[in-house]
Image 1 (tube, protein in one colour):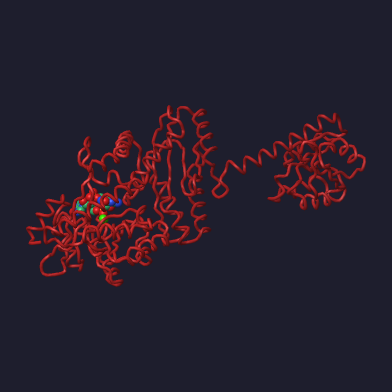
Image 2 (tube, helix red, strand yellow; image 1 turned 120 degrees about the horizontal axis):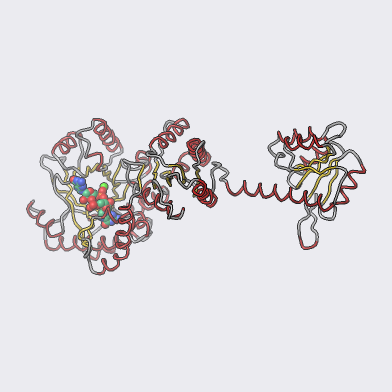
Amino acid sequence: MEMLFSEGEEIKRFVLIVDDEYINREILGNLIKDVYNVIYAVNGSEALEIIKENKATLSVVLLDLMMPEMDGFEVMQIMQADEELKHLPVIVLTSEKDAEVKSLKMGAADFITKPYGSPEVIRARIERTIELSEDRNFIEATEKDPLTGLYNRAFFYEYAEMMDRYHPDIKTDAVILDVEHFHLVNEIYGRSFGDKVLKIIGDTLQGFLSGTEGLACRNEADTFYIYAAHQDSYEELLTLIQNKLSLLSRQLHIRFRMGVYSRVEHELSMEERFSNARFAGNTLRGNYMRSIAFYDMSLRERSIFLEHLVNDIHQGLEQKQFTVHFQPIYDISGEEPELSSAEALVRWEHPQYGMIRPRSFLTVFEENGLISMLDHYVLDETVKQLGVWRMTTDLKIPVSVNISRVDLYDPELADYLLEGLKKNGLSEKDLMIEITESAYASDSTQLVEAVERLRSNGFLVEMDDFGAGYSSLNSLATMPVDVLKLDMAFIQKIHEDEKVKRMVGLIMEMAEFIGVPVVAEGVEIAAQFDLLKEMGCRYIQGYYFSKPLPPLEFEEYAADLGL
Ligand code: C2E
Ligand code: CA
Ligand code: CA
């Protein structure tokens, strides 16, 4: 069928008139043919054929009820039962009052009474019906996310505000649910599996909210927003989702991060409320023990603190407020523990806040890219310090530095390192590179390349915080590393939790199998040390031996050991 355009490029819509009586078709057709492209059918079955063929272009069907062969009711019945046809609006042409009610019940959009009255009225009814149906299609297509059936964010905010207006007395919560490393699910199991996961989450949320005023939306692939009547706990909801997901696959282990802004203040805009929820959720980044965080005011104060740090970093670097501390690492495989290397850890001597440890600012600096400046500063300082020790002392041990993901992807990193080492009379053997395991969860091919680049230049690469992350076993299989650093959380429980102990034993066996030595960090007490030694762990780092020390103290520490 050819599309016709009337003056002004307005599209002339297609209208099907179904009537067995020639004269009725003619009258009605003539009334509207200036405005519409009119097609005719003489009975129900012919009408259905035309409807099926032209379902994409037809705007409305004007349907006579009394016809031989197949009457109008039957046509409507068939259309209603067909997913593809039921949205096409039908206007019934009838002379009987009873039939009007019946046909409206059967899904007719409107009716026009015979004999035909004013042409203006008829045209207006047709136009209105088309407008309504097109609007409805438009709304359905845009306000809901087709995958999960949840609202999109813009509509969600609108309806959430409406909920407040209608129920101003209900205490409400703003909640954001993030799927951690969702892209990995897609990467490992495939997109359609990923879609299933999202759909299950969406369905569970809908089930959770059904019967309440609450509503949910999906935002940016794997983030869900919930606005609901206040609940004291969201553990149950999270467990419910986990249970539903475990039906999908037993191996599947998906972690969630849920930020809750409880009993929202109505003075805040919807955006602000959810920004608070997001804020709470973000405090869980890298925290593998907890999945739910509640917003409170002190968090806001923290955010102001972090804002200050971001503002102050440039000056801090210029004025050398940052220093590198060194923490000894011991080889315990022999008779006596032996100092074998050290880890460089940055400290910020802030003029206002005093000494700040990196945990407080790392996430922010990673998010805004400032970490790169800091890492380069730490690298420069570390290599300089090593060069000085090489010249003035007997200290020859290599030092591990922590490199954040941003810098790791820099193709010039290896060159930068080699140059700095050379300038200070050192080589690639003097520096080891620690990469935090959570970095392994991101784009793995890019990461393998980055790691290989470093290794092919002679650097040893260490996988930091192993076991804390998302895909430990997975990453061990695919990632070419030289050293495994066991996450501190294991070590701190190893002497009191049999399960943790067995887990560490397992990891140790695996590491031995692929020929990679293990560093246990965060070893604080003899009980931990003894166990690890017994299990065959080769390297130990932790307060058991020493805290990270400023350069001068580390120098004295080493001198006392005869180095
Ligand atoms: P990490 O690489 O896991 O470093 C070990 C952390 O454990 C250090 O915290 C260290 O001081 C602490 N630690 C060592 N032994 C013990 C112990 O026996 N008990 C306890 N409770 N803690 C112990 P720190 O210095 O606060 O550093 C935190 C994290 O910041 C580091 O974790 C590392 O990921 C990151 N980081 C430190 N310096 C840098 C840097 O220059 N660049 C980058 N990108 N990250 C850095
Ligand atoms: Ca480290
Ligand atoms: Ca670590």
